Length: 200
Ligand SMILES: NC(=O)c1ccc[n+]([C@@H]2O[C@H](COP(=O)([O-])OP(=O)(O)OC[C@H]3O[C@@H](n4cnc5c(N)ncnc54)[C@H](OP(=O)(O)O)[C@@H]3O)[C@@H](O)[C@H]2O)c1
Image 1: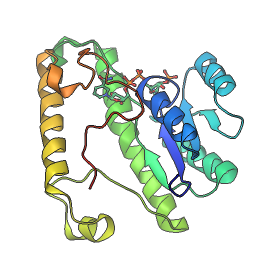
Image 2: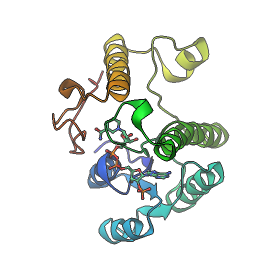
Image 3: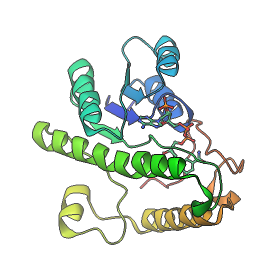
Image 4: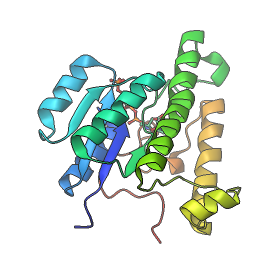
């Protein structure tokens, strides 16, 4: 087993996030997950080992994200890896066909939530030491390169293709099977061992 890491996964109470949490716990790492649905949180708390932190935190609220970070550090030790996973997988409609309520929720959760997560995690890691990993594109600036290393060409290319492909799918409402590893069109498989990026 590699060195034990402490990993926080937002939206880790079902789907891909829960799959990540299960895989990390099975590999011996320390894991914290959050979500918003109280019943689901209770179910996941009952399923995961007692050492795991499972708590309510809404990523659209920076104070709650901060509390998730603080609780994770207090219970598990300094967080090494932060995964902004929480998101809303809305119906595959054209963007303008989504209701106003859904559009707002998607932007607040998927965009603002990720920004809050980055703000809290990067500030916490800067204050407490540790490292963070970002999916960097070829536009990474000098500071990003110094902190995170040189972006690997093949990973950048994969990320570019996925980001553009998913954006096209979002706008057109037409899922493209090659962008989803299990080819189910609606869900990326949460199976441990699935890899989109190649390691280097
Ligand atoms: N599956 C795909 O095909 C696909 C494709 C592209 C991108 N993604 C992205 O990958 C991520 C995971 O997808 P998934 O299919 O596993 O989604 P999912 O099954 O719907 O799970 C979403 C998770 O996020 C949590 N969540 C939602 N809103 C939240 C909020 N405001 N604060 C905190 N937690 C919140 C949910 O818990 P609660 O309901 O309890 O809040 C749940 O644990 C999402 O960001 C999604 O947009 C997925």
